[in-house]
Image (tube, rainbow, N blue to C red; front, side):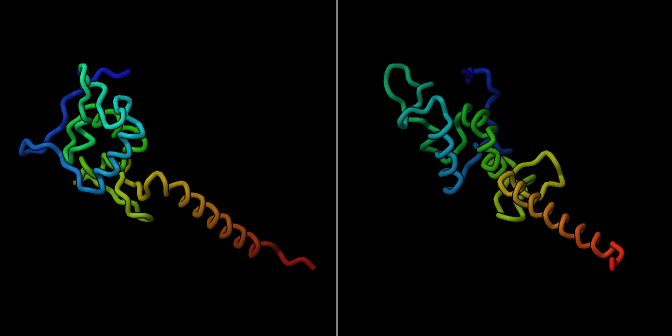
Length: 143
């Protein structure tokens, strides 16, 4: 289990405000929280629970205010696109196929994780077709 107190503080914008999500990003965040957060229980935060139920602050806020959400859920494979959309506006990349925002360590990436495999499969098939066509042209005529 993670100790939230060991996480670094939540990043803030240059003006000191918290990063904010739009409605679509908040819905995605809520899906991540409900599906992956180990402290989430029926709308309540078990980490903040000290004898009485406390509503999960991240599930009702448009701001990124929970350390666990920021440093664990957004770093997860499913949360990478949301992290890119919320925190990296200047370094934000958009998938050429579906238009979804994604983060990449490479400056050559063109596709998000979900589209990358499909595009590679199609490119490989196209390359193989081209090679077969070239090899047929090169074969000497028999007969």
